Image (cartoon, rainbow over all chains, first blue to last red; front, side, top):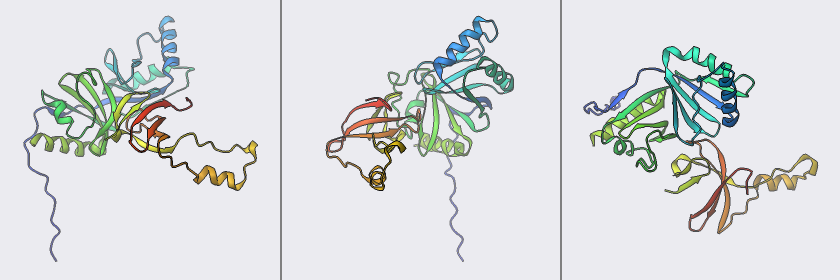
Length: 186
Length: 87
């Protein structure tokens, strides 16, 4: 009986501008933005939760507060990214700041991994499988959004003109990494 | 590919969306004492319009919101989009 042909991964050189980032702490925050902003302001005024919680209030933009980034994903949905070691303390502080506000804060640190795509050809490379307009006019620095990359759903975040961070669910990471490597080889 | 204007995120490629069927199909209320024919109409009867069609889309690979789009079914031209609950 003939052995079924095994698919070999194509041998291509590793890509300089593509790297897997170190683990991060990630939280999915669902909350009414206007209410949360008011609560944060009230907490800051009371001197309790001053400057704890980053909130991205502009559509499809990220905002930063010290080590933590908030990515706007939807009208009531934020993805909070920060250093892996500080996760638990941060979650407790945000929980305090949002006391009395209906919200959900879920630890999704291990749900996804991060890829960084950088270099002058980064946008061209991503456009191999991502249908977004990656010109600076449509997606300026700080732009973030859920979108698709090939068959996988990703969160795309433009950190600089030529540097993107991709948040990819773990099981899709090898696929996205492989597709980027293949696209770069072409 | 269609470029669909999401009322939350702005114009995005069609790949990020999923289709939700005809818009403004109201579920019969219990107070109206619906007959089987009313339920049949709610479940199955659709307009199949040639021309301007109000339909639901969901920005599933984006902000994940449902919203409504007025699309011309003959030319695929999208006239406008608006949030659920708006006119």
